[in-house]
Each structure stands twice: as C-alpha cells, then as structure tokens.
Image (cartoon, rainbow, N blue to C red; front, side, top):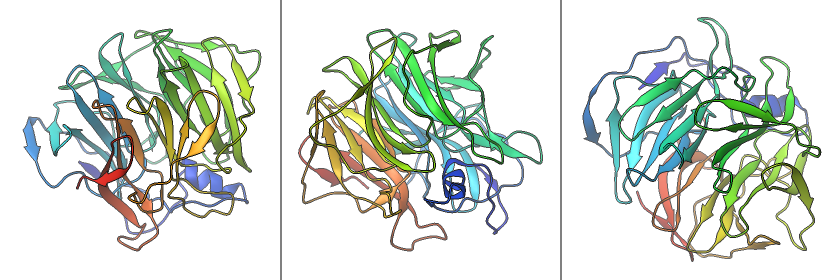
Length: 351
C-alpha cells in the first residue's frame, strides 16, 4: 500500500537528498507524496513480490522464520506495505494496523522480545510537511503495534541500527535529524524492549548518514563502516556495549555510503554490498569483515551495481538482498525489484 505522489521531484529532507545538499555527493531523486492511506486487513496474498523501491526496512523475524520487508520509496509514492519472504517466495501481509508510509526506517530483530523493531525514517510530520520521524513500532509475525516509550531518540533518517546479542539491546547510531538543513548526528541509543536510553560514549564516530552497521557474531561486537557527512567516509568502528573504538584494519573497502550490510553466519562474517563511492559511482562489490580486517569476495554471479538496497540475514545462514537503485533505466528513478540470496560463496537471483 502506498501514498500516491505527483509526478514531480522534491527535496523532502531524505538522507540522499541531504547528502546531495552537502555538495560533494549525490543520490537518487525522491518523490513527494500527497497524504497517508490506511491499511486493510485480510489474509496474506502471494504475488510476484514487492514493487521496485529503495530504502525499504528489512529484517529476519526468527520467531516466524521469515524475512519481513516494510515500506520504502517507490517511483511515485512512499510505501507502507508489509511483505514476508520464506526463502522461496514473497507473501504480502495485510495487517489491520501498519506504520504510516515512510522510507529509510531502521528495522532489526529483537531476540529478547521476539519482535522486529522499526524506528524512524522519513515520512509525513504533518499533513503538509515531510521530514524525519521518531516513532517506534514492533512486528510480532502477524501485526504491527506502535510502542509508546517515555524516552525516544530525536527524529532522524539515514541512521544505522543493529541488535547487540551480548547486551540483548537494539543499538541505533547517527543519521540525519534535519528537516531542511542537514544535521549529522553521532549519538548512540539502545532499545531494551520497553524504552530507549542514550549511551554517553566517551569516544564516538563522527556524525554521518547512510553508514553500514551490523552485528558480528564471531567477535560479539557491532561493526560500523563508512557513510557520509559532506565527505564520503571509509572508516571502521567497533561497538562493544559501552563505547566506540576505531579500528585500523590492514585492508578496507574504499570510502562509500548507501551500501547494504548484514551478517552471514555461514561465512562467520559481516557482509557489505554496493553503495556509492566517493565519485558517486554505484558499486557491485561484496566485502566481508572477519573481526580484524576486510576482504573483498570476488564472485562471478552478483547483483548489478546499486545503492539503497535492503539486506538481511535469511535464517539459513546466508543473506537476502532486495531492490535498490541501479544504473539501467527501469523506472523514473532506476528502481529495482529483484531478490538475491547469498549462500556463502556467491549471489543467486531468487526472483
């Protein structure tokens, strides 16, 4: 389900638009929608899959053993549809209640509550103003429920979010909190299933948007890479529960932002795919973090160059990738709707 938009482009305060405003980097155009639409309730339905989009939220819901995808930016609208992937096909879900349309929301599985947590993104602040959001929702495998914490991070988009298995908390870092002027954030927040609280880290990465953040189950740490804040970044940071530590690996990917990231348990490594390089060129590289350094995985079969795709663990030890913005013209914004699976050695087109 989406919110119909006029066929004109607008700088709506989204992460990539804000990046373009920095002067040194650019991103796909976004479209300004008109007004939210309500979701309808019915049984799940099978179709070819989600439509083309960028910046959809996606996470593996361990309790139901499905990958859940929500929202994103379509060619002419913001979306609030919910889809699940069982490893073979997509099913559209029709929950009675859904978060309002948005793109760029953070979504991760909270093992402590057995729910997928959704936070923020970009959508309607009022009936006439678009900007960053600060609402928190959870998905239990069947429906969405809005949470009402007494404390919440400031509204933002373009942030990183991952689940810290060691602490049993969802960790959120950075992003952009500006509505019309970029405000690059470097704060760290955690969700304990009931409330958000800010971690006052002694050392933190510089404020940034569109960085890659994922949990490394081998080292039991979160790894953050790259992003942008007027410059395209290529630094690596580790979160071990209380503070950030900058790492200096012997080898690293080139600076990039808007890449996708997820943990591949079959490899025992965090994967990073795609993104923009410092010259705003889309990438099709696959890199892996082993807890100490990065290595590029040279594979013959891989998704085409893209940015702003959605990545998630798939429950079978690999990773699933959906959509993004590619180079070949398919729609007004080169939006993609393909699904790829990573099996530990190569990418395979799943749809």
